[in-house]
Image (tube, rainbow, N blue to C red; front, side, top):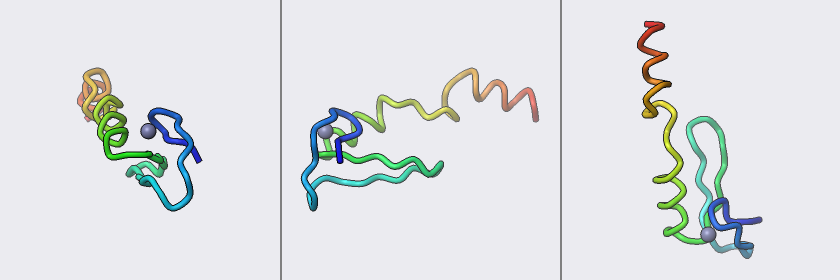
Length: 58
Ligand SMILES: [Zn+2]
């Protein structure tokens, strides 16, 4: 499998698997990649227009 962030091939038994609440699975070769992916990939709930849309609906 490949690192979801830097696309480095991850050897079996190494790296980390992260399952998001929505069922998406990420693989990370290191905690550095994990941090970058989770930090840089914005959570839609926290993204302005998505939150706005939800507010309008409510
Ligand atoms: Zn990586």
